[in-house]
Image (cartoon, rainbow, N blue to C red; front, side):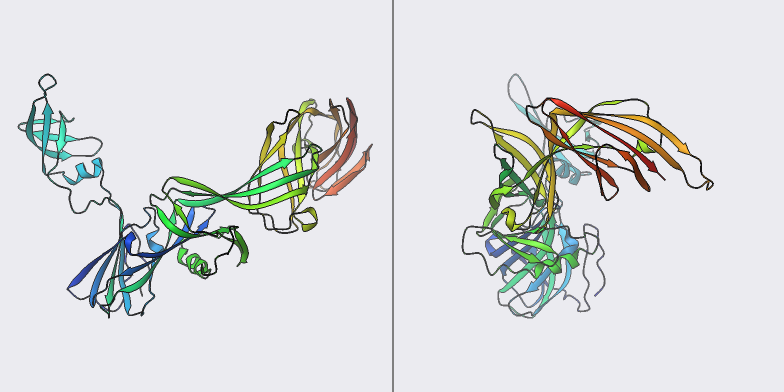
Length: 475
């Protein structure tokens, strides 16, 4: 087999030559026996379309209608599930769809009629015109004059054979049977994807939440998929020009064992997680559907106030005071059974809500969560605090002499003031990403080292303030 050679028209050439007499077979939705979708998060899906197709001995051209308009033609695979008595010779995809523009372009050099309507009497008159050009507009030759706009409406005699109402995938095969065959057509398509969304309802004390997860499936492929069995892949498969390898891996996930209840089932698959919808789904074009993915109540969470620093002021003099630094509000939790979770969490948007004193639910903020395995930790920024603020000032900066000219050693000192306008005390985590090799020389609160960060936990009293002072040496 020669490798694929892809443009919009491409082919797989086999050694067996096609006979001169070719029988054309049309197949559409009425021939479908089963449609399955494996949907990925990157606007891509694997389609598995099984059809009962009439067959003839010899060379057969099968025209598959009702395939995705955004099919990736180079990923097409055809399998004879009945007898295996066919061999594929050529595959090509026709996507030259009928539209006013393509119809006009197909008539370049041909005659059309221009119909004018008298605005007073309503009487219609016809003139014959030749289409000279359809690039960037229209150029017509009407009699002895050239027109660059249509002085009426254009009437065409017919639709040329090359223009299609819907795209068609054509597979040319050699067949050794005249009986109807069950064929499996597999391909990847763009325009179908899914993403996870979460609703987190915080309690009054902000130490527990009810978490519900939803899978939002969107179909913008230009095609409808009726009564499809649907599976969702959570993870990030590598996507390169070797797409058929990805497809072959996904095909090993079978749809035969569907869950008996109405809940989405979850299982590990390769290095990803596979979610199977319990019922068949009809996905209309330009439609988004949501399905319950998970639900967990009374999940233990921790609300934190975090002041994040930068690394730039440890290498240069910064005499100005940075006032009104935002203090982020973060919500952290662990994905463990002990904390009432302990299930794979596909990455997605988490939206936080809380009920106010009047019983009304209020939106608090949202954040993007990464794929989180069991026993993983999650930290999400919910917003910025209105009542808790900070300021930072560099109180001293000096470069230390060094015999090694390639090493630059700097000592600097800082004052961070944290203010709290709340009626209760809070603990603010100050996180400073200090570059290079560093050492804290002096501090009025103890720090902890977290990777490249120096971290202080500073308690700030109600309606009060606290100050952090520290000196650091950086090489």
